[in-house]
Figure 1 (tube, rainbow, N blue to C red):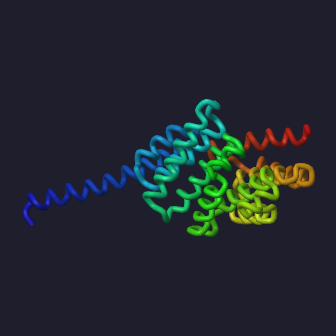
Figure 2 (figure 1 turned 45 degrees about the horizontal axis):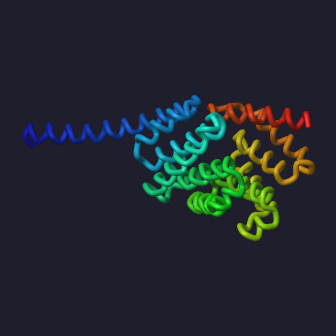
Figure 3 (figure 1 turned 120 degrees about the vertical axis):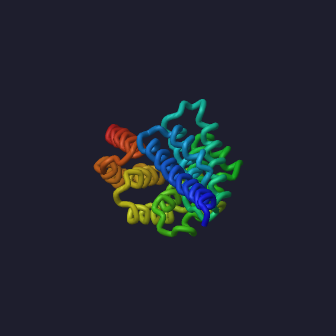
Length: 246
């Protein structure tokens, strides 16, 4: 092989190696931004990767920022952008369960903001449910998907009652089943305990008060691994204070 050809091949190989390294560093940089609570920056970095994984991370980051931190005037735009990113993640890789989960996450948060009537009119209940089901079809032991379905059933029942079951198949028994499965799969996740507790309170604030309180206390007792956990911790402390004061 002559020197010119060898040098050309070496350059091509190096380009692929460096491109792969840059992508790996970029997704890690985005995850670092997320872990440290710079959710918008994490979304921007992750979106630039133009990968299913990146778009899913971007959608999650924006949904968290929009729900917990952003001013009310920005929330709807953030949720719509987040849902668009999740759909792009699915387009790039329909076999990515996280992409389907984040579509459900972003639409679910948007539905909470616009209210039950508008959400039903836009078909959010069915779309959220179907997206989580797809995530579970792809990864049956995905704890976050079980948690999301538990919250979906609890929210549908508490808001729609009999009609939620009639129209969407929502019921309290499935809510509890999915919450319990999420807890089995992720017993060290603060968000599982808090969302389980909130789901119980939405179903029966009086009858489930003691169990919900125990779950919230367990959430508070777990260490915070990142900025999202710190947000969940603060919300759990606030919810416990509200329970004790109520």
